[in-house]
Amino acid sequence: MSRVGLAIAFACLLGIPAGVGAFTFVYAKGFSYLSTDPRACVNCHVMNQQFDAWIKSGHRHTATCVECHLPHDGIGKWVAKADHGFRHSAAFTLQNFKEPIEITRRDRDIVRVNCLRCHEAFVHAVGTSPRGQELDCLHCHAGAGHGAGG
Amino acid sequence: MRIIGSADGGARTWLLAILACAGIAGVTVLLLALLTNIFERKQEARQPFVRVVEVTEDTMDPKVWGQNWPYEYDTYVKTSLPTTTKFGGRGPGASDAGPASQKLDREPWLKRIFAGYAFALDYRDRRGHYYALFDQEQTRRVTEKKQPGACLQCHASNLALYRFVGKGDVKAGFEQVSGMPYQQAHDLTDAKGQRLIQHAVACVDCHDPKTMALRVTRPAFIAGIKALKAKQGIADYDPNRDASRQEMRSFACGQCHVEYYFKGDGKVVTYPWANGLKVEEIESYYDAAGFSDWVHGETGDKVLKAQHPEFEMWSQGIHARAGVACPDCHMPYQRVGALKVSDHWVRSPFLNVNRACQPCHAVPEQELQARVLNIQDRHYELLERAAKATTDMLDAIVAAKKAGATEDDLKAAAALHRKAQWRLDFVAAENSMGFHAPQEMARILAESIDLARQGQIEADRAAKKK
Image (tube, rainbow over all chains, first blue to last red):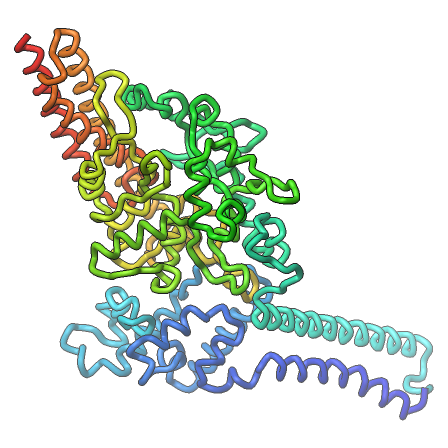
C-alpha cells in the first residue's frame, strides 16, 4: 500500500468514528450540558416532574437547577458536572435505576451548602454553617425549590 | 510496502493494524448504539402513542384499544392476576383456579347480619377489573336470586347496550335496562345479532376514544354528583364539563366504587348523595325516602345494605384533603422509556409502596408498610368488636320475640338495629380495612357499637315486660 493509501485508511479509521461521535453529541444536545439552562436537565424527560415542580416554586425566579445542584467553587463544579453527566446518562441508557429517583447523599450535601450560600446571613443564628451542618435545612424544607410550597 | 525491515516486524505491524481497526470498529458500534438509543428515546417522547387502529364509542373490546396503547393495556390485563394483602384478596384469583375465597366462611357474623338477603348466600373476596363481569355472571347472588339489569351499570362495558336500548340516548337506555331482568339485559343483541354485553369495564368507560381524555360515563354517577353539588350550592353540575383534571381522576373511580341503591320499581341505579357523602347523611336520605334493602331474616326489621362506599370514605380521609386522587395510589405513574404511563393494574397500594407512597413519603418501604398495618390491625379489632355488638343485639331481639314481645314492643330495638347495622356494614363493606379514613371509620364503628348495645338493652327490656 502506498503512503497515500495508508494515510486515507488511517483518516477513515479515525474520521468515521469521530464524525459519528460528533453527530451523536450534537444530536443529543451535548452542548446544552455546558450551559446553565434548566431545560438541559429535561432533555431526556426523566426529570420532567422535578422540572415542572420547580416551575411552580418560589425559587424559580432566583435559582435555576445548577444554582442548587452544583457546587460553586470552580473545580468542584466541573467534577460534579462530570459525575452527574456520567451517572445520569449511563443510568438512562441502560434503564437500570430505581424509581422514584432519589438524590444521592453526596448531591444532597451540595444542595445543603447551596442553601446557605444564599440564606446564611439569615439563618446563621439558628446554628448552622456550611462546614458544621449542625442543622440540615432539607430535613424540614424537603420541598424547597420544587412545588407550590417551595 | 516497506516500513520495517524484518518479516517478524511486518507481521507485528499487521497485527497491530488489525487490532486498532477492530478497536475503532468497536467504538463506532458503541457510538451508533448510543445514537440509536437516543433516537428511540426522542421518538418516544415525541409520539406518546401511535393509532394503528381506529377506536370509537362502539369499540368495547379493550384488546383493540390495546393495539394503540399497549402499555396501558398490558397493565390492565394484569388485573387478572391474583393479589393478596393481609386483609384483602385472599385465596386463588386466577380464573382457572376458580373464584376468590368466601368471606362468609372467614367472618361468620356476615351471614347473621345479612340473614334473608342474597349476600348471605355468596360474598367473596375481590378480584381485579378483568373479572368484573365474569364474577358477576358466576355469583350465586345472581344465579339463584332474581336480579335486575341495573347490576350491569358497573360490571360491564355497557355504553353500546344503553345507546341501543335508548335509541342513541344513553340515559334513557340506562333507565330501561335497569328495570329489565338481569339475564335478558345481559343477552341483548344488536341488529346484526351481536351480543351487546361482552366485556367487563374497560377503556371506553373512562376514556374519550377521540382524545383519550378522562371522562365519566355512568349515568348514576353523573346524576349522583349533580345532586351532591346541588347540596353544596352548585347548580347544574356536569363533571365532564366542570371537574378539574385531578377531580376527574377520582370521579372516574367514583363511578362505581360507591354506595348505591335501586330506586323504585324501575330499579334505576341511584347514588344517595343528595344530603352528602357521610354515613349519617346517606342514612337520612334513605330514611326520608322510606327505603330499605330487605327485611332481616332473624328479626323482621327493615334494614339497609351498604355497598363498597370507597369514594365516600376516601372523601372523609386525610389523603382526599391533601388533594390525592385514587389513581395516585392505586394506579401510580410508571416510566416506560421516556413516557410517563398510568399503571392500569389497579390494585392495593400496599403491593406497590415504592410508586404509590414513596413519591410523597420519603420513608423506607418497611416503615410505610408498618404504618399501614398499624392502622389496619387496630381497625380490624374495632370492626370485630362492632360485629360482636351487632350479633349480640340480634340475639337479644330474637330472644325477645321468642318470649312473646310484639312488633310494637320492639319498635325502638328495630330502629336501633337498622342504625347499628347500617354503620357496621358501611365500614365492613368498604375495601380499605380502615385506611381510607381511619378516624372517620373509628367514629362510625363507635356509633355502631353504642347503638347496637342500646338496641340490645331495648330488646331485653321488651322481653322482660312479657
